[in-house]
Each structure stands twice: as C-alpha cells, then as structure tokens.
Image (tube, rainbow, N blue to C red; front, side, top):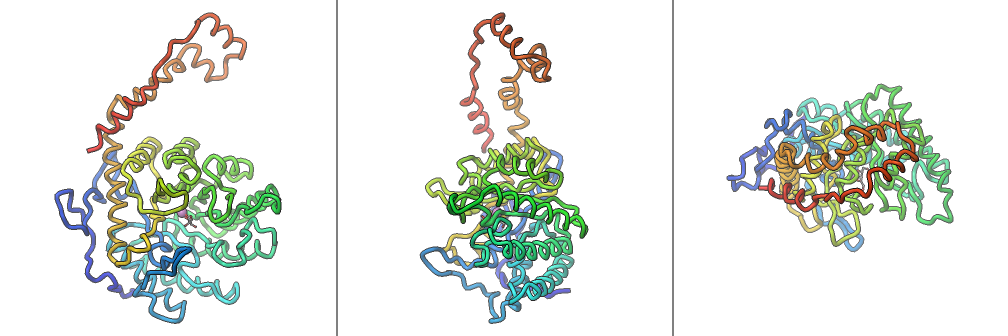
Length: 440
Ligand code: XUL
Ligand code: CO
C-alpha cells in the first residue's frame, strides 16, 4: 500500500452538485453514474489525465522559462522526483475521480545514461505505478514512448535517415510496450512526434514512410507476442514540430494503414487541436474515422481561432462537444478508447488548484454536450433532415445504383427519361436552428 500525498490538501474529492451549486470545486453536469442513452456518463467518456501536461511540464515557451514551481519536484535526483511526481498524479486523479491516465515513458521515469539504465528506471516506476493503480482503482488508458524530446530524434525516430536512431526508437517502444502491458493499458499510442520532414529536397519521403510502416508492424508483432490485446492507435497531426508530419490527418492515416497492412490492429486517436491545425473541424476527423470503423480514442482539447498553433487549451467549447457526442452516440461510443485531456494550463495559470478548474471545466463541457446531443438525436427532425436527403437511393433505380447493378450508360438514359432534377434544399439553416434550440 502506497502512502497518499497531500499536495492538494485544501481540495476534497470533487463531487456532482448540479447547476445550482456555487462551489467551483464541484461538477455541474458530470455525474459519473447518471445513465444517458443506456450508459453511465463514466462509460460514455472514460476520461483520462495526461501525465505530461499536468505533472511534468514546467510551462516554458519560446520566450520565457517555466513558471511552475511544482511542490512535488523536490529532489535533485530525477529518479526520486519521478516518484514524488507519481504520488502527486495519483492524488490528483483520485480527487478528481477520473478512471484513467495516460503517459509517455519519459514522463514516468527519467532517461538514463544507457538504454539499459533507461529500461531499469522505467521498470522501477512501472512497479510503483502498478501499486498505485491497485490501491486507487485508477487504470491506464494508454501508454506511449516519447520519441521527440531527445536530440537524437531531431530528424525523426522511425523515419530517421540514420538506422542507429531507428534502433534507439525501437528500444524505447519495446520498453514502453512492456510497461503498457504490465499496467494493463487498454491501448498503445503512436503520435508521430518528429516523423515528417523539414525540407522535401533533403528527404526521401517514400523511403521514410515505408520505414515507419515496417517499424509499426514490428511494434505490433512484439506487442502481440508479449500479450498486448488492446488497440494500437495512431494520432494524426499535420505539422508541428516538423513542417509536414506524415500522419497529416485521419484520411491520410487511414490510407497509410491500408497501404502498410495495419488495419487489423490499428485505429486512430483523434486530437481536436491537431484536426483544426489541418484546417478541418474536430467533428470532421471524428466522422472520417468513425465512418471507417477506425475511431479508437480522443485527445480532448481545443485550439484558438486566432492562432495557428497547437495551443492545447482545455476543451470548453460546448458546440464542439455536442458535435463530438452526436458522432460518438451514433457510432457506438469510444470504448476501449477514452477522452484523454491532452491539454495544458496557460503559462500564467500558476495556482495548483487551476489544474482542478481546468479538468472540471472540460468534464462538465463534455457531460453537457452529451446531454444535449442525446436530446438532438431524439428529435426526429434531425435525422429526417439528414437522411431524407438520400431518399432517392432507398429503393428503385437509386438502390440498384448503390448495389452496383447499373452502368454509366443506363444512368445517362435515366437522365434523358427523367428530365431536369428539381432543386432540393439542403436545409442547413433549419438544421442549425434545431441544434441551437436544444442548447439550454
Ligand atoms: C502532441 C501530442 C502528444 C501525443 C502523445 O501534440 O498530442 O502529447 O498525444 O505523444
Ligand atoms: Co495528443
């Protein structure tokens, strides 16, 4: 049994108090056991805390050093600090009452002077994490390897033009997979990190992408060999830190999975702010992956309409949450994935309790989004407006077309026979009103 720390001593376990409550340390909408559309809120979202942003990022930016003085960073020994950090993380997760967390290998344990020492450090912290998980009931949504911070990865990891670097990346992924399996992780994530290029003319793009495919098949095989039964996830992002990331967006990644024969084991982890960087809406990539049967998990955050970079704000846009929940409700939910708060406080949000406000806000936004999405889906107008547009394919010649029973020449003859089609309104404004009328 691990001792539980008291870094957040002024704060008790966060409870649901409803919209009449004025207590800022309470949920106004998130009620873990409330049943909506046949499932508890806890099961709809499977919320997770991102270890890196909340416990291991000191809030430096390109113009200034960190503003954080985390009370758990109290030793000069990085391995000791990693233990204090874990204590703080589990205290926070338990008080917030979310069921899951996610980590990079290097968030849990510091890199050593050799591959073997790094592996040893990670093993030590994984053992400790296992004990905390047992004590608290908190579970691992996914693990991953940080293949972008160390200078050796400046030209990429699996796509690095230097084979020696690819081998180091493999060593890290091997150890991170073992850690994920040991901790019962339900998924394993590959975010591209620096897998991309800075200049096309010093890059053999196809060769690098094929190396990535080879690397992922090896990782998949090793994971299955050591008993990983969960889903492998690729997290698309179009740019940053490289000028062009190979896992650009959901459509690009789906084509890559087809080409590299990875479809049986891999799905997508869609991050809101990555999708907006690709000039789509959050809902767009959720829809693309859900309709392909490949929506695996979500990194919940948001960008800023004014800024073209990955701001990783906490997700507080209600409309975005409603759209996301409509898609999840219509496509069977997110399990065994979840909603991971890959979001960070602002550099000037320096109080420890800001971490609670941020997560409470994100959870309440999605809970509210779920309640509204459920009402919208029960409103017959919503589906009529959408599905009614396709009625000409429901039977007759349209159905035959869908089933591949007609030729191009036959379509031409129908055009002649049926004459000019009547214009049919898309009813967008009415649809938008229907959605807005359910927001209360
Ligand atoms: C970076 C990002 C990562 C991944 C995990 O933009 O989203 O935190 O989620 O490596
Ligand atoms: Co992410």
